Length: 160
Image (cartoon, rainbow, N blue to C red):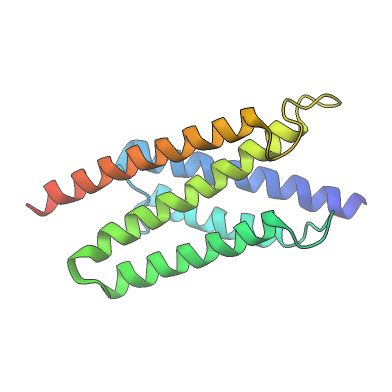
């Protein structure tokens, strides 16, 4: 159990660092980009957070593990499409929104973990499908859509 607690603690810290760098990248640059320092740090921390997630098996391979797989797949696809310009002019849009989607995945996971674990002994949410948690998740998705819209606008103005 202590090894699991150590991995879990590392996972939480790395995940929070990733979220912090992701938010800083969005605030400073309007996007998460592998060409900018905060974006680079975000991407490294995100990969590490996903890798440590695979070391957590309290109830077997579950939703959190699948979210880590999805996060890595979206990161890889966004990087490949963006760097190889596989979609021509749309490549930068796909890369930018893809990286922002990975931040959404972090936030959804963090909301679930916080909501179902804190306060200790009497968590705010009874489970991942609790009404309040679903409303928070919906708000995070709406925030992601708004940020993505602003990113598309920013990118299209930069190309014009």
